[in-house]
Length: 289
Ligand SMILES: Nc1ncnc2c1ncn2[C@@H]1O[C@H](COP(=O)(O)OP(=O)(O)OP(=O)(O)O)[C@@H](O)[C@H]1O
Image (tube, rainbow, N blue to C red; front, side, top):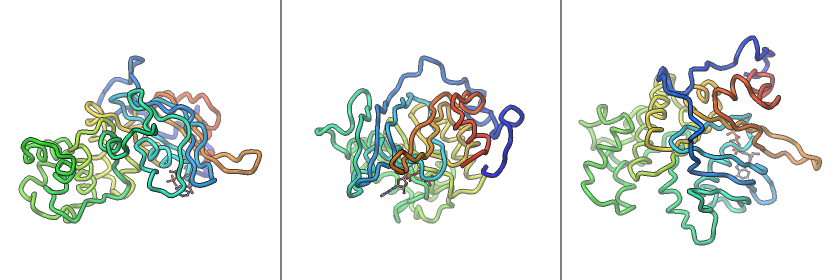
């Protein structure tokens, strides 16, 4: 989007068919309830404060998109939502990340349990070098989920809109699938353990437009049962799939330290048509970023 100098009033930068492709779905209502809340969350890598003072809700059964220029801390904040930064030496979170009102960084909270209830799908599809079946069954087995494994695997693959394509080759390697199918397999693997929240870090950036469209449709479908948070570089994608959008940017403080910060959080339709902050307007109209 950079380089253009268009006027917001004359040409919106994104298609505004939110939320969900041709879904006709209603925009989120004021009754939406937060399943997660960030209160003044800052994330540090050693002495470097990558993101400063983020406060926003994550609404239940809604898709929340995080957008903003490269390096503004979108992935850092996303990873803070399920303690995925914990293994990074020196990484630290201040403020509160609440899940159903409970601070995920409290001493007695088990990070493994956090990641089971708040799952993550990564940028590059990363199936295990195992069969399609075992990819999905893996999480069920290590979490000791009881019941008929076959049924759970079928259910997860069906929810991930992959069952019809793989039901006759469940023993084939997950790596034999196309990129888009591999990403849906990773989504099936994530939802098999029945998380409440699914975090997606640029899940379509390695995919072609057709595979991207399938994942976008799937996100919208999944939002009826799950809460979804997606980081995307693609504003059109945020506008198509999300109910709420958080716009981040990178700023330089008085000490010449560069840090990411949340500029604006609102319903997606509003953010793209009537942003409250000039920096949001400049970004969505392509004046920077
Ligand atoms: N493991 C790490 N160690 C140290 N610094 C890091 C680490 N990961 C990210 N950073 C820094 O934190 C800042 C925010 O990075 P982050 O990847 O969260 O931004 P982003 O908005 O997701 O960027 P992009 O859109 O390019 O993926 C950047 O300055 C980055 O260099």
